[in-house]
Length: 385
Image 1 (spheres, one colour):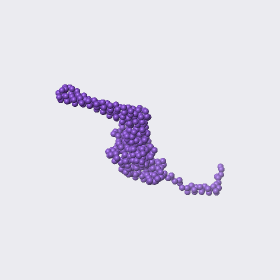
Image 2 (cartoon, rainbow, N blue to C red):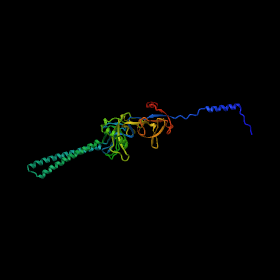
Image 3 (cartoon, helix red, strand yellow):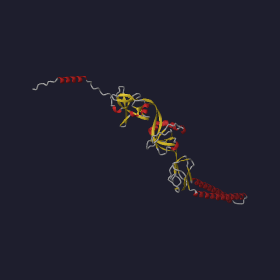
Image 4 (tube, rainbow, N blue to C red):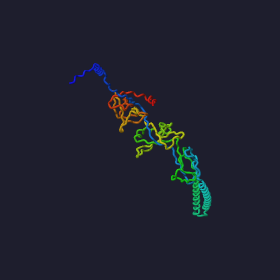
């Protein structure tokens, strides 16, 4: 059996000091609750503004077509330039139509001479009839011949007017003020008259310019009362409340007005077509471009507002983290409505005055305590951004 090991004085002292340190050491403190930024649910009256993607079009568009057949003699316009009503666009070779006018003038002169002769014959037969020299049949024949000659004069005169119209139609002018478009024709090309023929060009009025966009049936019903009340007013008396956001993200500097709502909902898409007009000085905007139309559709009283960044989405459902009076958080589902600036309008799920987490969402968990820090005023947030 081994004798017990005797500790030295230094070892004993070290053990005593070690025990004292362990007894005096404070216990490790629990982790502090995470710090999060919270905002209070606001309640106030706000205008409800919505955006729709639409396509620009001329407020007036005219396909310019030839009214007579012929070969192009002159193209007087430059594509993409501004034209006024009655400005010359192109001219069809007028010589065939000038010849037709001359022919109809000759036919009218001949018909007039014939009618003058039959008029004299009728007068002569009338005198003889009064004197009982000729027969009833001779007199009737003279009257009918004169009536036929008069009809011949009217027919010749109508043919002459048509020939003059055709000659005038050989000169094609702009029917409206606007921008003239592209043409596929060149000097010497043959153009056909009427709707069957290809348009020689298109003229569009782009100041003001029109935007066409579609509202869903639900959106239309929500705004129908406000929209209908506006559309019954004359166009120049309607409030200019619309904004147009161009494809480059810039806001068009001129406000727009609702122009019209289509007569029916498209059964294939469940949408209704809406048009609006925007001033377009300088013709910066052109037909065919895409843009967003932003319009106020109603005034919502007592709307509940929360910052958009506070709302999270999971599997098609929206929720927020609510901080109670004990500074503990819980997840709550909400129904969001339209946007208002950087906020959501909340339809269901929250009450005015409740606190929700807007920053530090990754730090929270159900039922856990937090250290809430009030969010800075919106003006400071905007300046910071």
